[in-house]
Length: 343
Ligand SMILES: NC(=O)C1=CN([C@@H]2O[C@H](COP(=O)(O)OP(=O)(O)OC[C@H]3O[C@@H](n4cnc5c(N)ncnc54)[C@H](OP(=O)(O)O)[C@@H]3O)[C@@H](O)[C@H]2O)C=CC1
Ligand SMILES: CC(C)=CCC[C@@H](C)[C@H]1CC[C@H]2C3=C(CC[C@]12C)[C@@]1(C)CCC(=O)C[C@@H]1CC3
Image 1 (cartoon, rainbow, N blue to C red):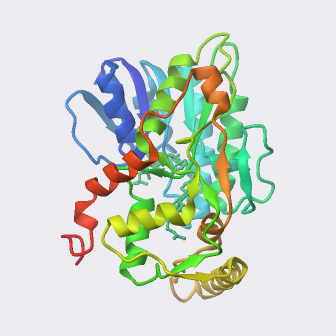
Image 2: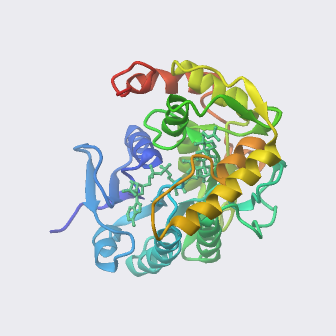
Image 3: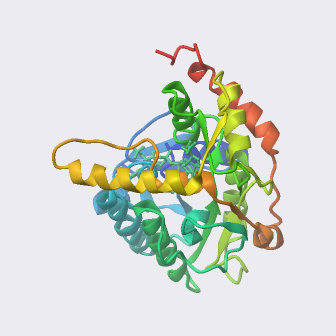
């Protein structure tokens, strides 16, 4: 059945970022089509095509008759599935580019990650020209690096691509950061601060990430300075990791962490537990709560400059960190200590 042309196709449009992106695009008067492996919401203004990014016949049904594609799809960054990361983030992205060219799509905006330059060591004011991590912190990040390289290399005089690198996205309907923090707190695993608690990091409110994506798409086109480039998008307000996390968990009704543990001790325990988990994997499914990736992110500096986005796209955050934290906590009533989700 023929489907209506659309200004935008949002791949992964039923996810956390994807749904917020769709909502804002509709508010701005754009027509929107969603392609996702699952359907998580209804909206009569959106055409939904449910399918797998890795399946050519699924994607062909969605890719025709759109002006710009947002590629937001990825397996959960907190899952532990190297094969799935590579299948979706690398092979799926290659297929997407092939079909964009086949269908005559002119613009592709990739949701990459600021973590593509992060090796688990301090990054203070990181810019986009830092080299890709030679030793990525995990398989997810490894495939995000490959994905971004593929997309930016695909930029030509007829097919325009760019990448948006958000960091630490949070907000209403976040399925990763807040629920994981609340789960740790609920299980009594949020009593300790890893390190001295003075590591500065970026957390980015979802509306600012969406704003950066839409600016990128609107500035992407023939002869544009945006073509073939990556852009850090953050709240531009680095904050102590443990100050942010404490505001989140206390706002959700749980106690603030009190005691400090040495960073290196916790990191090497996490590495040891990861090795045990791998050894036991043929016999049992044991996933440690604190992986080396989470410990590194919790104990090192990792904040980035948005100067390139400010210059090329006139980006500036729309929602402050404080307002974003307040809105996020208000939106998660069901997960509050003693709330309906506290079963
Ligand atoms: N959250 C964060 O802090 C950050 C996220 N990012 C990037 O932002 C993007 C969006 O992340 P986020 O919204 O948090 O993630 P979500 O998991 O909420 O959304 C991703 C969506 O893509 C879907 N998807 C996964 N595999 C496929 C597939 N093979 N075919 C079609 N759809 C698929 C997912 O479905 P299902 O849930 O069933 O897998 C989900 O609906 C990702 O690319 C991520 O790498 C970058 C920096 C930070
Ligand atoms: C150690 C601890 C207290 C964990 C609770 C919070 C974590 C679940 C989040 C803190 C930083 C977040 C983060 C991501 C996922 C959730 C956290 C680890 C990403 C890995 C998501 C995908 C990306 O592209 C990079 C993000 C970096 C920050």
